[in-house]
Image (cartoon, rainbow, N blue to C red; front, side):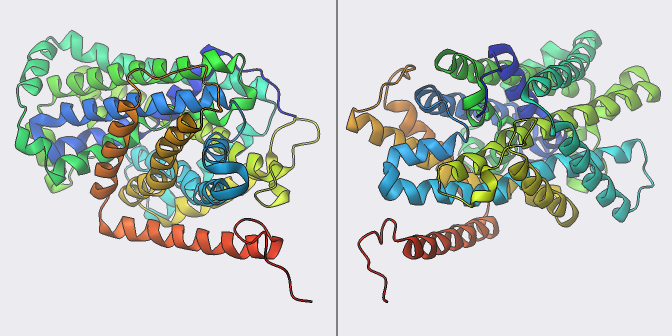
Length: 451
């Protein structure tokens, strides 16, 4: 049985290191390439969506503080013995794909940013690095939860030091206030409503994902009714401030016009390292790059930690393959689930590129998990059978806003990615129906086997 050993501070740090990762360092120049001087509004939009969605996660997480997060939420919302079986199964099915994609994105980003330090790395060597990173993090996670909480805090300190150095550099440079004013004054309604803005939001939302990591660890959180909601809101607010300050800081030294030219010509993907180099020299830039790589490792650590609990929870519930329900005999963690997700992430890190992974991650999550949970929460409210320790303000407005914003982001992922999601979804439904028919479960519970 899992133990409640993670408090508010450790839960918040695990959320934050999951959120940061390599994402903001890679997506910062991409967003500027899409939007030019209006880049800041994509980061604000990502923060608003995360805050609104965190209200949904908070109600569900505080009401059902169990390992597996969304698996339990979807099961409870749609009925444990009815459609909830399908929705929770689909979530686990897509988790087997998208969780390794998230881990692979951190590993691929790590190897890509390493090129600043070792520019002569061949493609096969970059793949070797990304695969090795997955193996290293798996080894770090192969231990008791008490030790993991301490490692998480250590990694979180590295995240704060890295972002803090970047922000301080911009403030010390002396042009940050003018940069803030210029970016806020660049607002255009036409751009806000465009497909390009949606594509930029895909990248910023990706950089915020992870604020709900604490929900996957629900069975290991102390005082979950209080700590789960608080950790999410603290994480989103803190990271949003850090992201905005980081963007303004970098743009105060390297004008957004210059960054946009780099993106248009694909000539420089190490903007933050170049930023430090212009302020403090090449040696400092190397140190900053090492710190960014540290942040990528921290994010990968949190991702595999949280998602390894999802197939485990489903297996314990009897809704997934029994082998995933196994806990390590001495260290008491779901080692089979961890090893399987890590193995798939290892393969993905060798096969895919960063841009493909980012869009795929969002498309896999939006319909079943994010929109599914929002609709499911409304169903639970209508049934009036669940006690919600946390209650969102202005209900049901946050749910409506979340659904509309997620639909916009889903559309912006592009046709190819949407088709890929539909293939995964369809295959999941097919496997579920075969499994249910064989076991005579919903919707075939009244079907008699032929003898």
